[in-house]
Length: 475
Image (cartoon, rainbow, N blue to C red; front, side, top):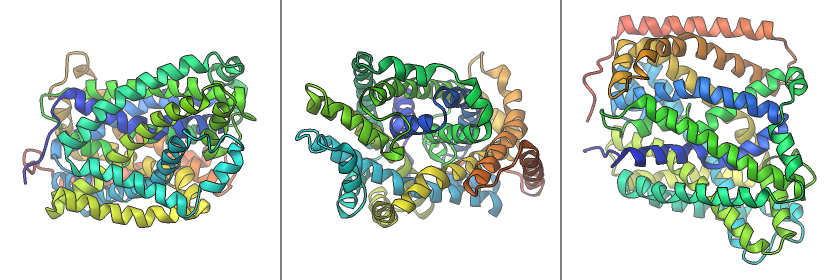
């Protein structure tokens, strides 16, 4: 079965940016920023996206384009070992877990978009969200969002994903800019900007490890790296594209829209809500909905706002669904429509648990997925640097321009040593925070070294035992 490719570079970049932006930048980013000190979190997040995120994107792109397959097929065909194939399986599992809670939030957004016409949530936004966020009705809206996502993915790469995101992403940007201009005129805008943009060094010093772990998880979440999305999307990229240029463009767009979303959300939270730290995952639906309830034309503004968020949610869900769909199409030779609707049924089951259980939803959305994304990206980097090695350099240079070519050797060794160590450090810091263990940097560094050194040794050993055959990409 012949594999599709993107029709244009713009289509690939917009699809990848849509995956990266999604709810991560509009729903989760303001919530995580508020819970982690505002500007202190923002600074670490920006640094991690640029310093770690771009090289990580490149690692995923190299794997995907080299193999021209889904994550499971990529690791199986390039490395031929069970150890690395298991990393591809982890990607598929992570994507299904992501969709399981993400689609619940998508259902909330769809409901709020439709209810904006009547102002159903205006009277008491907090009580309304509490009443509708979980249960049978939440599950029904979740199924509607999953069905829309499945229709787009079933249509294919060019006619479905690319055609849709080419329309959605410019619409998201234009509407966000308009909302940011409007938010700047609200009474609490100055306080919102101060919390969001004025650096708080004291808070960062006191809470460095917890903020670092949250910032790293959010960076990987918004960039869609660690779950296999970018491996899958890059598998449809032609060889003449510059992977370093594309990775940089996606990261910059992601940062820009993330910051823009903050310029909308924080002025409104300070203008019309109890404060930015109130509400957790529901902050967007309680604080922002309250803003529309108190404004002339609130129903129209609410509809526009939640339309933006709905479009962003769909672009991310599309990319998540494409991972297991490509696995079933490539490895089991299923028809795309059959694979898509079969997965619709599976995610309806796993997502239904999230729709009915707040405890399960919180576990997935706030903790488990971040940890899996960090482990996934760590594996991608080590694999690219040491298992692919020279083949990774060759793939990086294919189509690369004069500015990015000199960076290839530093890139390879950074993703093979420094960045995996950093990610594992944040992983252990997050695990310690989840289990309530108070620890300093010393034990975390020891745990990091005891993990990263054996991992690199395993990677180098797998090269000598079973060298990859990069020239034999599967069709």
